[in-house]
Image (cartoon, rainbow, N blue to C red; front, side, top):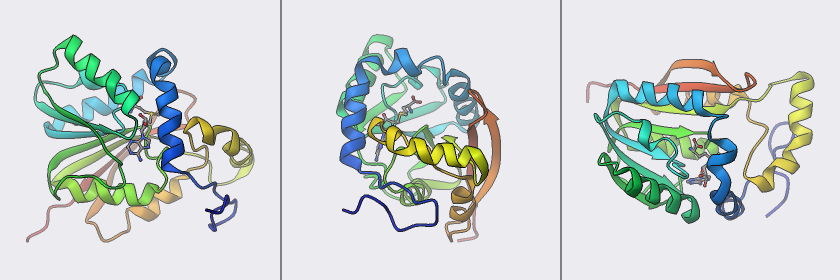
Length: 226
Ligand SMILES: C[S@@+](CC[C@H](N)C(=O)[O-])C[C@H]1O[C@@H](n2cnc3c(N)ncnc32)[C@H](O)[C@@H]1O
């Protein structure tokens, strides 16, 4: 596989799923310590939005299950992740905290979700879309498994479309990639994706801490007559 994808300038580094899986297997023992509190406000905002809908909730990239205890009892949760080591941590949390609303955890690739279409009322993916190898294909999968009227709720880093910040993010990309992060992911990619014929509409984009570089993003699947 070529190192540099043939996309618009600046060039995007190719993201490889095996590499991401290995990176998060390594992060698993100390993930909560490093990323627990720094992303806590964002996670609370995303879970509040999911709780308002309730029903069957798929959390993709559930990781160590750090969010699982936050959901209301009106949510029946299924968590998936590419990293078995992260999921083992999630399994331990479910057992220790006796989380009765967690119906299942499974190793699964976000780009190939093993669920029928229209299975979930909500798909939550927190800090995940920028970690997968094909973000648009992943968003397509989220839309496929979502019921009409349901929501995709994302927490996502949104990079700059131009200027100095874009340059810095471009320079940092090769350093961040082996850690499982993509520094370059401009809002224009979400804006283009929502135009696909998937009956999705943007309902919210709000900044969340830290650093003002992250957003809570909600897309709703429009109910159609048929
Ligand atoms: C930055 S962590 C976020 C974990 C958690 N959602 C949180 O709020 O902290 C990204 C997670 O996405 C998972 N991930 C990355 N690529 C994936 C893929 N293709 N399919 C499923 N999970 C993936 C990683 O293993 C990791 O657990």
